[in-house]
Image (cartoon, rainbow, N blue to C red; front, side, top):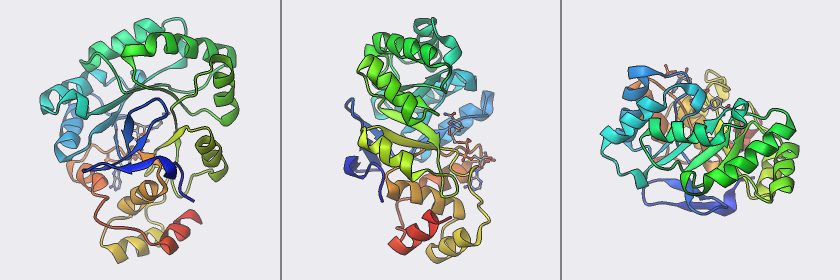
Length: 265
Ligand SMILES: NC(=O)c1ccc[n+]([C@@H]2O[C@H](COP(=O)([O-])OP(=O)(O)OC[C@H]3O[C@@H](n4cnc5c(N)ncnc54)[C@H](OP(=O)(O)O)[C@@H]3O)[C@@H](O)[C@H]2O)c1
């Protein structure tokens, strides 16, 4: 079963998915959690150099300044980059101030996607979501959530009439929930998978065998599995060779039997 398959379109350079709110999100992005200072700056610069056009950060990652500087110094035009940041739920009541700070740090006047980082009490989530909808216009091209289950998404939607464009959740062959994927897909919510490698057992023999057959690494097999399922994936690395490897996913194709083997992990 391919999640988000209906929405999958191919760009000249890389695959992307249409968002219900308009525009599209590149299937492969660059994660920046647990990188700060020069490590974050160099990693994002390298990611943009090797072709990533989608970068994921968050207020709590404490690296929006470095991400912003890397974007500016890369020379890649702003409109060719898909930029995500996230607001922690504790900022309820300070939504305007939080987006202004993010935009200032990132050196841009809009983000492409703005997520509630994780759910808290439902009353708080509802009021934060309403504020984000009000503020979002112009400052965030799309709004979404992270770590939300279906009940929490339906609650936001029922209260505001505004369906989140994306749910960013942990996802890998070792950590997935086909039932949730199906329900997100029915609501037109794009599934964005995080911690694809961290939540995988990269030394697993099934990954090794498939990787050997294609002449790629186990990490590339995992990331290609996301792409073929139409799941957005945002691997993080601080190492130049891995940053390049994790984006080099379009020169091989997993067979249906291999996809099934990975699904069964
Ligand atoms: N919304 C949320 O709550 C949430 C939570 C977690 C993550 N995220 C987002 O998702 C992104 C990715 O998740 P993540 O950072 O948790 O984990 P990840 O991308 O699955 O894995 C990163 C780890 O794998 C290593 N690695 C990277 N490429 C590798 C390769 N080719 N072979 C072997 N090891 C490799 C990295 O080490 P090196 O750096 O040394 O290469 C790092 O230790 C985050 O950076 C963040 O943007 C969101």
